[in-house]
Amino acid sequence: MVTVKILGSGCANCRKLEAVAREAAAAAQVEAEFVKVTDMRQIVAYDLLSTPGLVVDGKLVSSGRIPTVAEVQKWLTA
Image (tube, rainbow, N blue to C red; front, side, top):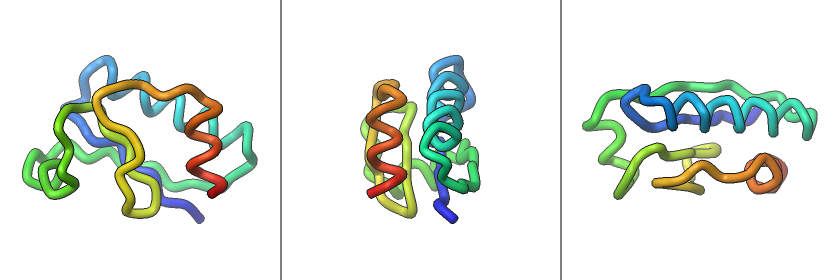
């Protein structure tokens, strides 16, 4: 199972990023656990410059933007 973390305050972009990530996981038929990280100390630990951030299995793959479903699928299946 892949662990996907959504880093951010819970803003509209954070929710949009989560929706894109869930759609990508479903499309790629990847079993994923989704975790929302809203604690700023935990977010800063990922060297995140701007939210929202996306972490796949402990690796920061996107920050400050909402990637496409295809991009997220690629990260989930890598």
